[in-house]
Length: 95
Image (cartoon, rainbow, N blue to C red):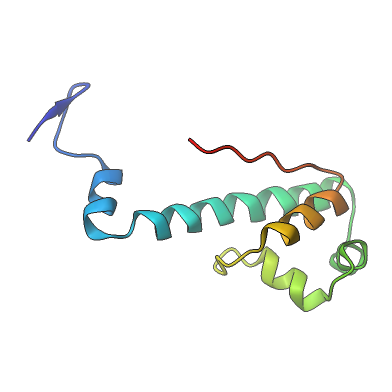
């Protein structure tokens, strides 16, 4: 075991990478954060799901899929439409 900043062993990220789960778990976490941010923006703007779908020019069922934190599949253009419809912008950054 290697010591890192006073800890023994590897990090949870290392464990996930070793198990081949890192990308999936990270994608799910990012989707949950985005879902929460979109929902909060809708609430702050008093935007109903029906109104949000209308602004995005999509169906209510498509919006429900976007807002489902367990559905990790999301298209970038859909994310941009949702942000715009809620009066927000998207900023992406590779780390």
